[in-house]
Length: 413
Ligand code: GLA
Image 1 (cartoon, rainbow, N blue to C red):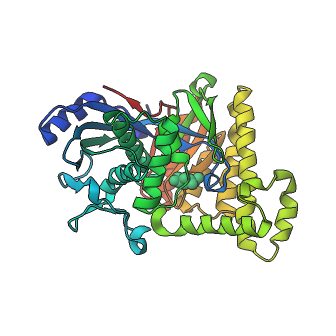
Image 2 (image 1 turned 120 degrees about the horizontal axis):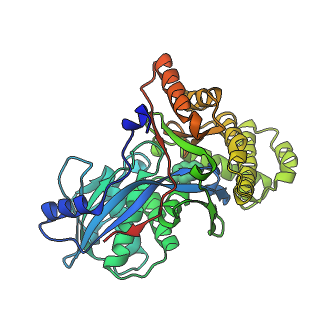
């Protein structure tokens, strides 16, 4: 562990403290304990809402839920990470956030004029999404504890949604497969929180396995576990949390998404996934009058190609070979998709200058985290160089930690 990792968020936390907290908050034993992880995306950014390819991996940072069913249709939500007591809602009264405020204020209506503001909108939204799908889900007591950093682009919201979906799946014996739980979690975020995200984060949280990255074709949801034993190859994957608050609901994400859809319409394809890499030059020529859309299309088409190339290297057992592809992915997100920021660029540039094998921003962008692939022996030097570069630029100190590809959502007890 480096000096900076000591200040980084601890990943591990067990079921016992969450069980004890549940008893203290809800006054009885939980029926079970479940966990779902945060994620980083190795490559395949802003491709999931274009029916494209993604390659995320689960972190060992998780959200743990203790839960018990209720027979009175009441949902009682409590978080060990947030001050403010129990949020109590009637499952019958849960409503989507009103359209005009949906994009900014995560709020799911809970009847009696009460709203599930902020964090509670995510689990409440999952309950609503399940009921809307006709699933026999009633009330529940829930308590959550999380080690997934929030606002860091590491999918703390997907972890919260998926752990809720998994707990309810067991409490109400729904028998749903992980991929279905991921869809319901995405529906909760799209319709009830108001963020128009794709399916990547929820699928990573629900379906990842230890020691692997998850290759997902977001069109047909076909997925495959790709070996990613980075430590065995003398390498390390660092996460650099820039501490710049990442806010997906601020409209820029939705704008990029709308731009991609416009591009697909102009090109006459169902989604940008359908533009083959070999025909990129022709496609770009058709968009000569629309430089903004052109740049978005170029990113998506080249990024899908990079995912396929990275997967081919990983299948061949050569993790080091993916370095330049990660770095090229960053340049494309910075220059064409325009979702990077000064701190992310600095993290990437400083890491590469200090000898990293490859580096890129990960997740939606506009802040959040970067990932850095580095030789084990070089990791401390890269960590120190990035930290020094942030200090010299007057930025808040980043939090840097090692990503270990962990398991997806599971029952702990
Ligand atoms: C966020 C969204 C994902 C995906 C990424 C960008 O994490 O939740 O669905 O679109 O941004 O790749």
